[in-house]
Length: 74
Image (cartoon, rainbow, N blue to C red; front, side, top):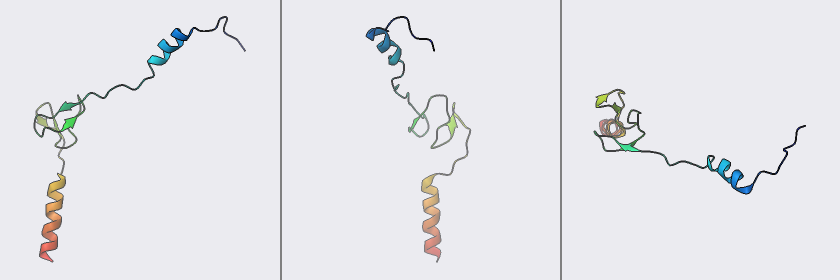
């Protein structure tokens, strides 16, 4: 098995390990619902991307309202 010819300096080791650090997540705010979303992705809350509705998502508020109506009817 091959061995390194010299010991790697501490500064070189730190420079190499620097790239393994965690990066900050970039976030944009959806122009329609003002919730945080990843850039270049459709909004997870309202489904809008580039000003167009790409995903048809049911809102959590709507599903709760439906449940309340079902309970009232019983």
